[in-house]
Length: 110
Image 1 (cartoon, rainbow, N blue to C red):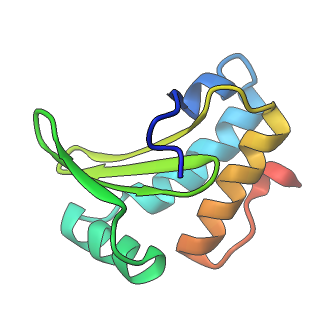
Image 2 (image 1 turned 30 degrees about the vertical axis):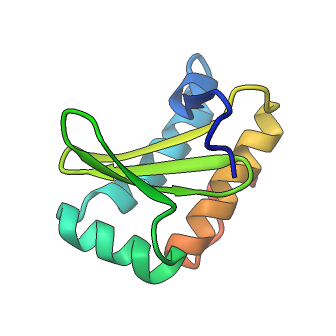
């Protein structure tokens, strides 16, 4: 679990790398296009019960794994990784999450 570690939005790792950013955003949008209740239910079915919920401006359901954290709220989905990861480790974290949700390999590692 990474609950107490500092995390950053995965987008920050892809800023300035247009090829990597385009491949990631395509995969991100494929997951984030469903209505929030469907997205939350899909995550619960594939990842199990959320690690915890937090109430910020809106309620966030949070799932955590070793190097990544995903938030789902009425505003959509946010994917974060530990700040100290290399770009390769960030891509591997995304692959782990993407495969668990979609059953497909991510194009980030190709």
